[in-house]
Image (tube, rainbow, N blue to C red; front, side, top):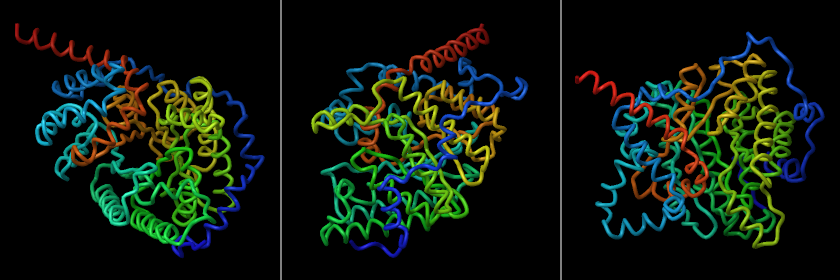
Length: 448
């Protein structure tokens, strides 16, 4: 197998270390079961209830109405489950221009920052004024059977480098972040293949893909933290291998490349512990994006159709235990060495957020030290994001941007993958409604 000199000599070394399942060291394993130590009550942070509609007072009247309308639609299962088909029909009936005019002030404005640099800048400045940090996301990805060729991947690279530049050159955040999907730069067709089996043409594309990823790493190093998204289980071993190789090259003095761990997978804790060990043995810093995961239905259907053991946890409770256990491990590590480890607690789950805040207080981790931050999607879970920001915690919002046509597939996929989250936004909808009623009553009093 040919390997790229850009990531040499680590790739073969990583194949032996990671894919052969290097055991986690005992000291790290003990963190997974170590009980929380008790601390005096006055050292703990103020309890976060996320019940106060005043968090939405920073939103305009129009933003409240738009959010309520969109969330009302998102709470209807038949609309969410069939949103791709419905949008395709609407685009056919209205035409490209009419469909964009319909979507832009509603769903698009709720979940997308804009298309032009001016629109994006306006959205980011508004977010920054609320104490929130943007984490830009180019909405480009591929699945098996969707590969589009080298020219498209090179165009995607240009978009990624533009994202790095936009993230770095503006004062939206003192510690800018962006998201990266490796399948935007490297064909997903290669990811399920064992590397020794690559043909010459596949090797050529693989090397080109590594060069594109290396360019992103070189451009972003010491400027913008790149959070590599996890994808489907049949791709993740290859994606994670490449991500670890990038970490070894670019994370010597800080966590500039991050990996994502999907806690709805049964193996997530063991993968995290292996990578902690790998970061120690290979002397690089580890950045972790901790998520529950969004591909549950597809993973289960695929496992059933192929006769595989299901890779996801059997219940929501097991997933919560997995998430909270991994969170505890990382926070313990950060409390010992905040320069080597970083985490973004990427969740809409209020209990996990409260747990992270509680443990940060117990372990003496700074709210705004940078080693721990929180993340939610743009347009969702603002009652959590704004409350955290108002309490002084670092909060990032995942911010897709681009034209209606370019972001539509991304929005459809996210809606289908996160439909349980979308259908469970009753609390946020109720808080928005309370704030709207408060303003209406206030307006009536002022007018009388």
